[in-house]
Image (cartoon, rainbow, N blue to C red; front, side, top):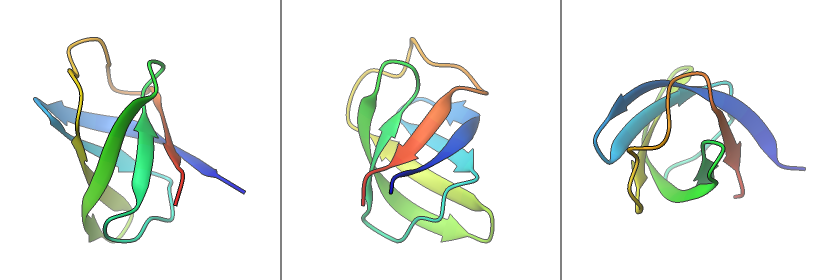
Length: 68
């Protein structure tokens, strides 16, 4: 089962999400556009993600889905 969270911060290609139980290097889908990203840091409830596509169309509050 894939777990969904939400974006809380966007800084260029690096975004932060909460509400997903992610591990380092997990692949995730970011935002309503389902952009591909990879978990690069986990700090408690906050997960930092490197997005491999243009993030200009996403905003805080959009979903993040952990695909494993």
